[in-house]
Amino acid sequence: MGPAVSAAGHAAGSPDWLCRRCAQPWPCAELRATPELLAVVSALMTTAIRDFRGRPGGPEPIEVVRRFLWWLPVSHDEARAIALRMR
Image 1 (cartoon, one colour):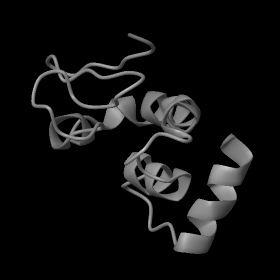
Image 2 (cartoon, helix red, strand yellow):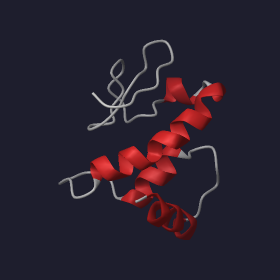
Image 3 (cartoon, one colour):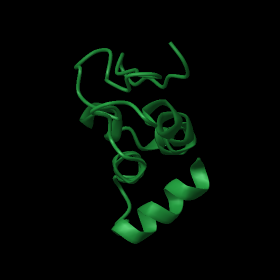
Image 4 (cartoon, one colour):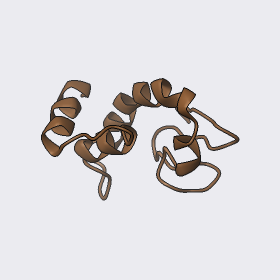
């Protein structure tokens, strides 16, 4: 498993980016409730975008950006610009 962040066992990393505890798309709701981890979650976004690239059925980079930056009101165009910079 690649990089991971954990809050009470709610950890995930590449390549599937699912919570190891609750099996929800990571960052799961439990992790989202842990504000001190926001900077680390943001840093892992680049790795997630790269892991999902070209994966059948995987989320597009724009979806990854919006998923990992859930606390920001990111528009589609803004998420696209961020994803392009994160590649």
